[in-house]
Image (cartoon, rainbow, N blue to C red; front, side, top):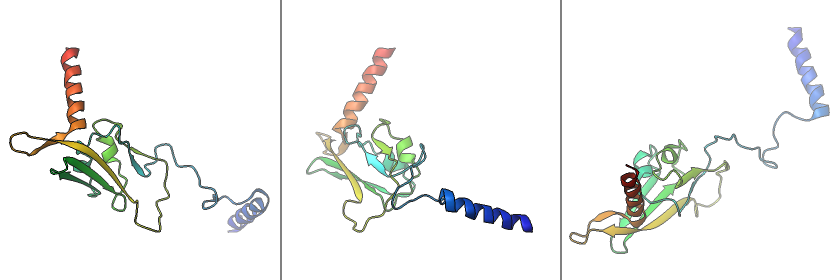
Length: 152
């Protein structure tokens, strides 16, 4: 029973001379682990709005809206619903459209600017007017198909 008390006394004396073991968090943020899944960030140049991330989101933190009149597809990421599981990043068809950042401080005072929104031009069927996909998605598919065909 005596040894634990001596250990605690030794730790207290070391803390006086060397400082505390804890981090200085609010004043100096500690770095996140290399594989940390922090705030999700869109790359609007690489995202093709294919909808893969919307389909695999287990927390329903993503919405996709098609506006046929304006010919725009909008994808919204609701960060307050996100559980940062990483499925959207893993299943991104371009592998560059979405990524996790190292930022982990999610606290905000206001709700404005908390949702990530990205928009792309839609391609509609000339006969029936139904949505086919986004122009960026179609372009990426055609490039992939051309590379696959020429690779044989």
